[in-house]
Amino acid sequence: MTSNLTYVSSPEASIDLRPPILVAAANRQSQERALRSLEDGGWRGAPIPIDGALDRLAMQATAGCLWIELDADDNGDALDRLLDHANDEAAAGRMPTIVAAPAAMIDPVSARLHAEHTQLLVDPDSPQRNAALVLLRAAFMGPAMLHDIAHEPASRRLRQLSDEVGRIAATLARLSTGPEAPVRSVERPVSVSGEVPAVSGELVRGLIRSRRVRARYFDEELFADPAWDMLLDLLQAEIAQHRVPVSSLCIAAAVPATTALRWIKTMTDCGLFNRRADPHDGRRVFIELSPDASLALRRYFAEVSPQVTV
Image 1: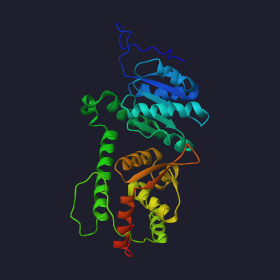
Image 2 (image 1 turned 60 degrees about the vertical axis):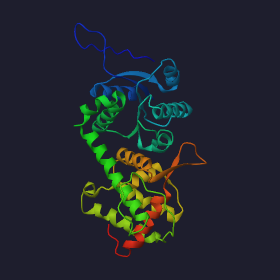
Image 3 (image 1 turned 90 degrees about the horizontal axis):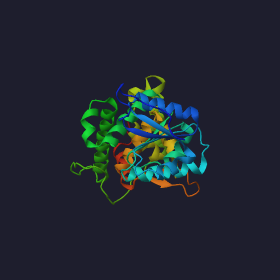
Image 4 (image 1 turned 180 degrees about the vertical axis):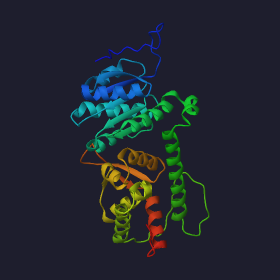
C-alpha cells in the first residue's frame, strides 16, 4: 500500500518537505493512529502493510525513518523479519525506528529491537509519542538539529537519565574494588577480581518488599528509582538462579514500561546489564547483571548489612 495523503504547505507549493517516515501497521486502525501521531509531531507518513514492508524498503536507496504500529502479535514471521531488518539498519545508523506496541509484546519486540536509534513504546499516550519523535528528530537530522531540541522535556530527561546511570556505574565501579579504593570517573564498571561476598536472598527480597510498601502511603512517583529497583531485582534473581525476561524487569522497575525500557537499554550500554538470548524461545531475551555489577552489589550489601535502608 502506498500513501494517498497529500500535504500542501502553501497555495503555491505542492511539495511537502517535512521529514518522511514509513509507517508499517498491523491494520487500518493502527495505521491511522500512527499517522495522527506523526502529523501532530510535524512529520509526514507513508503507510505500508507489515507483510509488504521489506519489499518496500528494498525498493528505495534509503528509508529515512520507520514507525511500526502494533495492536497484537498476529503478524508472525513477517514482523520478526521486519524487526530484525530495522534493528540492523538502525545499528548501522541508516534507519532510526520506533515501535508502538501493547504490553503483551514487550518480550518478542525487545528480543529483536535493541540497537541504538531504536525505541519501543509500550501502550504509549500522546506525550510519549511526541517525546519519541523529539528523540527521532535528533537521530534523523543529526548533530545540526541538537540545539533545536535542547529545550524539549524529553531530551532533557534522557540526558538526565544518562547522567544518573553514569553516576551509578562510577559508584559500582568504586564499590567493586573495595571501600578503600580512590574515586574514579568512569563510564562503566571496571573489570575486577577477588572474593565475592555472600548475600542473603531474603535480605534482598525484604528490601524490595519494603520499597513496594511505601506505595501504600505515598505517591509511587515520589520515590521512583528504576535503576536501583532493577539492580535489586536482578540480584535477587541471580541469588535464586532465576532468569528475568525484559517484561518482568519492566514491572520490577515500578515506572511506565516505556521508561523502564529506556533505562534497560541505557544500563546495558553502560555495562551494568547483559542481554542473553533464550535458547528455547527466539522471541525472548533475558536480562542479567554484568559480573562487575553483581560483585559491586554484593560488596555493597556486605558493607551496609544489617543496617540496610530502602
